[in-house]
Image 1 (cartoon, one colour):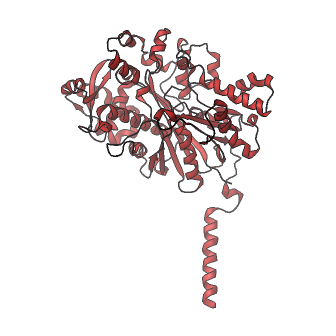
Image 2 (cartoon, rainbow, N blue to C red):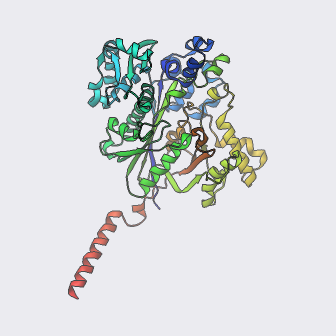
Image 3 (cartoon, rainbow, N blue to C red):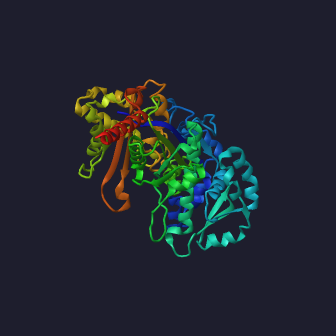
Length: 510
């Protein structure tokens, strides 16, 4: 059996300090309910600068400059541990806010983003130098007189754009009465699209894939674009593909809260394995609403506001090349409707339902990637160390099954688990942050099998009380492709053609 492979991955962060205050849900709700609060007066004093964000070890892990295991050598909170980081990483980059605002205008197809002449003059050379891929769209960067934008923002018909606390532009609403096209929604959607585009650009760069060879895109963020007649109709995938230069691609959006990326990777694997498409990009932009989500707790604990970046990622799923890790499409785990919502039931369904089909033990998996949320962010907010809690539940399940002894539980967590390093952007931490490292670990590294686990809280949408989750197993490629095992696809076509020709000749002779 020939399985699809994980051929490349990219990860991006965008430092957005002004968007925390102007666009994050926590600050927006506070302004609406308690506009004179001390929190709103104080928050700007607790926001990190770009250099501190770059020199933050979890962020360097996210873009591939450091290994996750290195986090164990640093004392927590990690934000007190300064390192010398880099903007660019093996797997992506940390983009500053001014360039991201410019990228949002590049991604704007309906002339909704207005930026000042001064701002454009400062930022345009940076885009030209850093992103040659965007040159076909560079003409979209243009300055305007933005004075009228202040009144539009004050009257809530436009969303302000700020850099270093200065008003540099605004985003207009796309319709006078349609709430699905109001300025706030258009802002959020352009953040998703732009961060998805940046992720796609870096995937093309790092995987060295010909962008014209990518024939399908699956977008799996937690936002939804549409209008009054089809709220959430989409399509972010094709919108992102257009700017990245995937001229031979089509695509669609997949939604499933935090579990969506794993759902999308399984769908991509099925499309490739079936032969429908050869190269499928799974991509997700970030969520501006979650900026500063736990800022109140961070400030109370004397910490900086740690949710100060928008995240994004992209993964390339391709036909088996005999080199990259394979996705075992026959070992998919899933949380069924009838599974139940207890933590034990959820974990059992996700971890064991797949590997049981291959008579594997939990210990046969070398590493599990679960909800890889950065504990620097979650612990002060009272949510604990999320990855560690997941690994303890997997270990307890291994004990219950008899795969390990109870005394070995601590060692199991240490051996099979990883410290969390991803920003709390919902879908971004859910299993997928490890894939970039997985490709190395299962090719040139010492691991042979890994499991990606995505979990989602469907009850947040108020349509069901169900949890959700899916998982899949990736393995080291044995170097044997379908064609090496037997007859190639082209040879099969030739045999069929010759057989049909012989059959026709036989019928004529009769």
